[in-house]
Amino acid sequence: MSETVSLTYGSEEGDFYMQHIKRTELFERNNHFHSTYEIYYLLSGHRTYFIKDRSYLIGPGDLVFINKYDVHKTSDVGEPGHERIVINFSDKFIDRDHSLYHPSLFNVFEQPAHVLSLKLQDQIFTRSVLDKLDKELKEKATGFETYIKLLLVELLLFSSRYAERNEAAPFEHASPLHRKISEIVQYINKNYAQPMTLSGMSEQFFMSPYYMSRTFKEITGFTFIEYVNMTRIREAQHLLRESTRKIIDIADSVGFENIAHFGRMFKKLTELTPHEYRKLHRQ
Image (cartoon, rainbow, N blue to C red; front, side):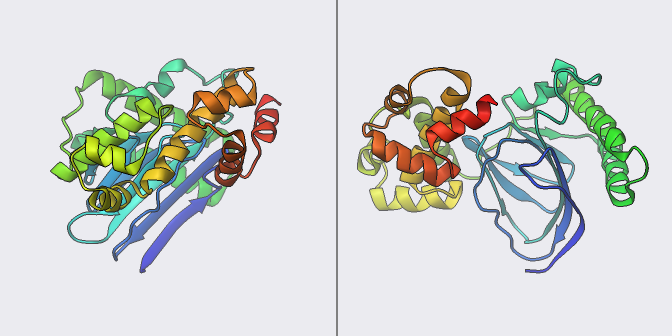
């Protein structure tokens, strides 16, 4: 793969991360999700972006917002190659006690559509903010940590206001098959606590088990059973963070009939036991 990295700062799961990269060959991002917010700005090329439960076709000037723990995956469409900037940041980076905090900053992550298709003048403004961030992170002048927070707040506030002023353009599915897989994913997201099998779901959605298995993996990046288990574990993570329910009750409520299987799957996906995860997030 041929790529040029203009900037990499921090890590995706850290408090603040930014990367600017240009690729000239075919590239497909593995599926993933993380505990940080993500902003993705496409400078050139065209991409298919699967986010949460559906896919979007995005082009230059599109600004993408991905909430914490939302599954996402990108892949090429048409001619390979693209240039993009990605920012990840944690709740700690601009928390409720920070002087720059305002609830509206995060409204854009709650929009039904995850993509803002910016007009030319707004693309110019967005690029100017991103260029300032790039400069600060490269030069690391006195007080740069404060300035990058200020610039991030400016970008978030601009984006939230833009979303309020402009009705989201309808984004078409990349293909009828993408629409079908989106319907299946939405069903899983709503009914994860119920028993689910590949054969049962393929019959329900009028697909052969083999074809559904192959296309589900191709579009989402997960096998069917991987996605079901991952969705159940993500909900269990939420309950462990936000409730005092017993772990055995949480396992049952998210669709695991066997507590040992739940424990193994939780450890596999999070590298922590449920007890360790709860303890870590209660500190």
